Image (cartoon, rainbow, N blue to C red; front, side):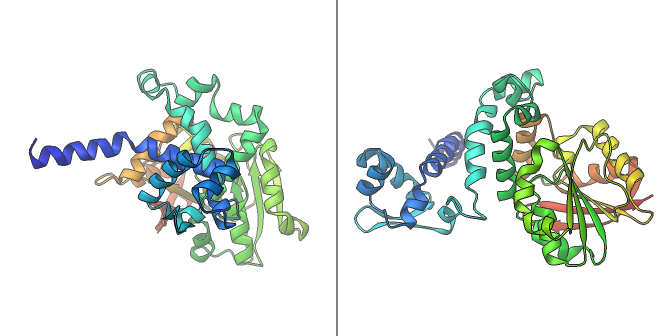
Length: 334
């Protein structure tokens, strides 16, 4: 085998075995290894005793995770957390909830991937016998864990109040989930007032997250269906990671609801990961296929989002790059 074939084989093996690595990260997170190591339980023997396993098996798991720079150290000198493994801890701002949800429900959704792509039925529906949002509604604990997973990955939200003027303005966070975007805005701008809309059964996490702001009457939570109506007279309507879950007809219905409800000089702000039409990044197209597997959603190109807004009666004013290949698209009534 020549060098080019060796490189191709190595690349293929890295891709094909990628799931093994992610499963090991999931196991470490489920067992709470990062928290145990942080507390000083840092050898194969003590970790095994803490989780009810065997030192040799824990050694092999930790050896793999050290090799991929999730953790550092060894059993002789003790393991230690890295910036990456700190994200697996059970602390505020970590990725723990995201890793667990992805390692459980979303892992199951990808198992029937071949059947899903052939039939057009999302993998989640094939795996669980119902669509994603019906499952979340039927299983409140899963719904709560999903919102916490989404909260963990909201890496761009702190940028929004810096890029938009919320002084003395009211905003509606449509499908606001955990309330993290609403919280970021209200903490950054004391004169802003907010309304967060989501399904009635999904408001518990937001209620906890926004408790101090609710007590100060700076925000109200509204349970309802965004495809039926949205709260009226807002200056800014925020659609953060919403239209990726919706088909064209539903997206246009939502935009129409916002257009009808907003104040005369209002704006709609779409915050969404988009795909470059000319050079799509690996992460953006991976998330695109994941949306299909989860809920028959899709990531659009920036041009497709602009076109969608135009058909919904809006004219785009500006497009701003955000972290993690996300874009903020601001539009006014056309």
